[in-house]
Image (cartoon, rainbow, N blue to C red; front, top):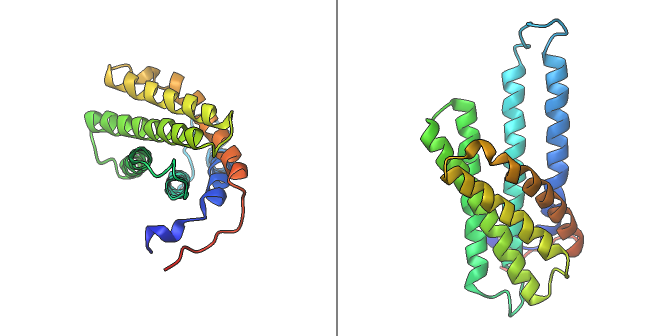
Length: 207
């Protein structure tokens, strides 16, 4: 499927990001409750590993939904969004998505060492940070996202960039202090963006 066929689906995938996240949290909570016995020290059920793999796939769907939103934002037909900066934002989200999928594969198959893990974490944080900052600056300049929504995205992106910086300077354990509020703001931004873009039924791009 050509990427331009994704045009118009952005609002629906923007809504999907926070709802998939909530579903994934409820899923892993239920799995944990059901898989572990009430007695301390008991072993989890034999299907627990498969359930965790499904949970990781849900997270892959979350970041892929975010990438579809990025693609849709980049294709908004507006003179002020037709700029190389839009491609920088889209590239940042693409890098973050690929790095996160590799991170999930590493969690399932245990493929890499600590250095590769930290590099992957940096790419995830930096990519989504660049995407949020750049695309919201472009959207604010074009007047497409209102007054408040772009600032939420910019602050969220800045927090992701701080998390990436903490990984680079060797303070990866503290990256969560920037990542978790940044992720919470990103979820709120994505939901609001879905409403902002209209939530209309997608229209296929012309052939």
